[in-house]
Image 1: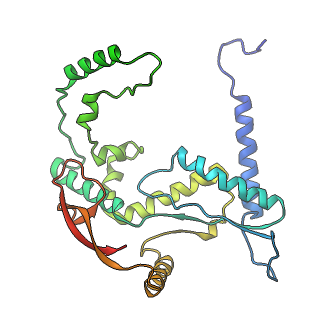
Image 2 (image 1 turned 60 degrees about the vertical axis):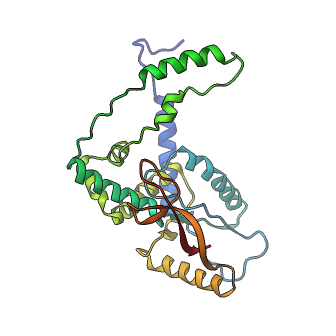
Image 3 (image 1 turned 90 degrees about the horizontal axis):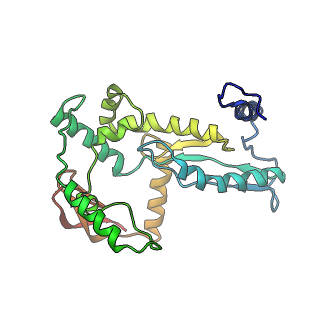
Amino acid sequence: MSSNTDGAKSHARRDLLLKIQSDAQTCWEESKVFQAEPGNKLPGPGEKFFGNFPYPYMNGLLHLGHAFSLSKLEFGAAYHRLRGSNVLLPFGFHCTGMPIKASADKLAREIQLYGNPPVFPVAEDDSSAEVAEDNQADQAAVAPDKFKSKKSKAAAKTGLQKFQWEIMRGFGLSDEEIAKFQDPSHWLTYFPPLAMEDLKAFGLGCDWRRSFITTDMNPYYDAFVRWQMRKLKKMGKIVKDMRYTIYSPLDANPVLIMIGQQVKVCSHKSMC
């Protein structure tokens, strides 16, 4: 029988586990157990282990999918560390490419059109009758042992698009903070430190002295990528040629998909 007579749920065991976790992580940080230093001689077979994770893109917060995938690398690194190997686990944050720039431009357009903070128009839902008809037809047509998506045909056809400002609000950001993201460089200084804190709370055995972001805001990594591309081009592994692509006149740049904009297919010269 539980001794908790007032009906309130006890969190004592949970709180104890969280305290043990916090104490262990503090001990790791103070002892610098994840900082890899070079030895005095070349390592033999099995005496070193290097692991890396595909850089998560910094247009938002990390999510459970990152933790799930990263756990495999974390378990491998911890295993080799327990076997006495010198383990090096760095971590990078991906900031290169158009998604951040496109999101920043989208915020600027929303402010220009709807004010700061923006007041968005309320979309009229004229598909409610169609949704009800679709649901009734689906219930009658689908066998009980078959899987059917809960998303109706009408909802799938509408493809409701969220405003970028609303997406940023979903991260728990204030309107005053969101306005700063019109500057693409603000994304590079805001989200990586938050991701680092989440990864530390996750218990990642990373040598944080070897953490970095991409783009030319990091001249060292940028120089490495430039050297790599020149090297590959000299070896004939990459060429500059023409290909067909979807082009956004609004962004003046090739894009992967277009939503709610005029689509233009053109021939674009790129490295491929």
